[in-house]
Every structure is written in structure tokens, then in C-alpha cells.
Length: 438
Image (cartoon, rainbow, N blue to C red; front, side, top):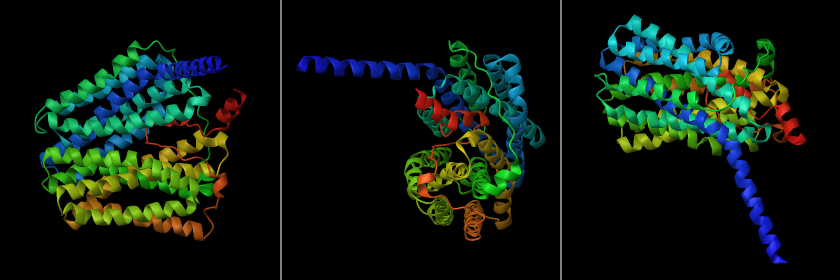
């Protein structure tokens, strides 16, 4: 009597492993491409900022140059999808990777504030195009019942690639050309898994326009959170290396500082997500903002202590900074039907992009105004403090509607990429209905 039971259990285990393999197999190439791409882009953001600082450009000029990257990303959001629809995913990915690599090579050949601003603009267009290709491809290959798993793993790849890429800063002298070649190598290598994949050529998903006014009226706290996230995350990537250079950290120390901050953002996603799911988000969001404001202020003290204390504090700093965006997105989705997930998130991503464009100029201005590198953290503390105060105001004035905890949507680990990633978001009515049917 026991033998058939053992056989049955073994069969179920074998079937389970077979199903898991069939689920993950279509995504291995895309995950590998994303990891290489994130490593290259993570290194690029830090290296460009550090190089500009070493070359003697003022913080405000550095901020202006780096802002052009985010302007390019916003512009690319509207135009890259047309190219992908026209020539297909593999050709588009190759073209975008070639453009990004060409811009990197030009950075290494010619040093000029205006020229580098132009190079960063086209780099922004190429980068958003690369994200669009991978994310729309993932969406096409994803089955409804595993959408949440695919989405989470993809976001983890983004965080891991970005954090690992920071360590490559130690491979060469920032004043030389080596790191330009390292970045170019990583970006070109990301073409290999995409070009060799046997997956079908997916169709680009259609994104219906949604009225900005409606989202602003129903989810002001969500839009504010995404805008604030753009103001903070963009400032960290662009001006973080400038801050480290100004307080005389070595290149190795700078790379560890950037790495642990990004990893902190990944590690705190789960505890903050669990907290967000269990309590009223109209309360959770101001609490997160307030804690981030306090931690940002304490970072000034940590930065003047030992390097070890700075790294430990940076884990918390990054953890709260990178969780503002997914918390704000979840709050916005609390206010809408599941079928509106993609459309609403597109507007939220645009809000983030606007904040990202403003951020380098604003944070570099704070450093200049205070005539101190610690103006970097003063900027974060003030930004988070204003975000907290406005969130509390919206709740008290009942502009931000209170949603019962049991009716809130699930928190999802998220990192800003392109609007195509929103297609994979499992919080949609269609996916739920299809999952029930399966």
C-alpha cells in the first residue's frame, strides 16, 4: 500500500521540477541580457559622474550634463516603441546596444561639457529602448500563473546587476580609458543571449492613453511618491560619486558605498512590502518618508565617522530610498481597478521621469548653495521631509482616500525601468481571470 504512494509523490516532484524548468527556460536568455545590461549601466552612471568631478567640472555643471540622460529617457519612452514595432525586437535591441556603445566610446574620445550632454541624451534614448525590448519580450513569454514570479526575478536582476556593476569601478583608473571599454564590453555582450535565443518574436503590447487629471484626482499620494522617488534616486546615481569624491573617499570606497546602498534597496523591499501590505498605506507612506528624512540627516554624521559606519548607514539609506517608488505605485493601484494597472503605472513612471530630470540640477544646487558636500544629504532630508508633510496634509484633508487594508493590492518589488515592465505586473484583472480559468 505504501509503494504506490511513494511513486505518486515522486511523480509529483518530477512533474513539479519539469514545470518549473519549462517556466524558467524561456527567460534565461533575457535574464542574462538584463544582468549584463544592468551591470554596464550601473557602472556607467557612477563612472561618468566621477570622471566629470575628477576633470574639475563644478557640481552644478555635472548635474546639468547628467540631466540630459534622463531627458533622453523620457523622449525615448515615446519614440522607441515605434522602431521596435517596425524592425522587430532582436534588430532593435542590437541597434540600441550599438548606439549606447557608440556613445560610450565617444565619451572616451572627446571631453566637453556640451558634447557629453549630447552623448548622455542619446544614451538615455538607447537605454530606455533596451529596457523596452527585454520587458515586452518577457511579457509575451509570461504565462499568467507565473507572472508575479517572473516580474520579481526580473526586478532582482536589475538590482543585482546595478550593484555588481559598481565593483567594476576598481578595474581601471577613472582618469584613463579602461572603464569605457569595460562598459562597452558589458553592453555588447548583452546582445549575445538576445541574438541567440530561440524564443518567438513577440508583439509590442498596446498601451492605451489615460487621463492625467483622473489619476491626479484619485491618487495624488501615489503620483507624489513617484515624483519624489525620481528626485531622490536620480540624485543618488548622479551626485553620489561627486559627494564621495568631495569627502576624499578612494575609488574602491566609492564603489562599496554605491554597492551597499543599492543592495540595501533590494534587501528592504521585502520587509517594507510586508509592512505596507498589513497597514493603511496612507499612513505607511508618510512614515516611510519621515524615516527617510531622519536617516538622510543622520547620514551627515555617519559620513564624518568611520567608513564602516557610513556603509552600515547607507544600507538603511538605500533601503528606504528605493522603497518609496514601489510603495507609491501600490498606493496608486489601491485607488483603481486591476484592469487599469498598466495605464496608471505609465503615468506614475512619467512622474518619476520628471522628478529624475529635475534631481541632478536640484541636488547639485544644494551642494553649491551650502558650499559643502554634505548638502547632498541635506537635499535628501529636505525632499523627504516635504514629501512627508504633503502626504500628511493630503490624508488629513481627505484628498487622499483611505482604503481598508483588506482591499489594498499586493506590494511588488519594483525598480524604475520602462513602461513595458508594467505589462508583466501581476496586479491586473486579466491575469487574475486567466489564472482562475487555468
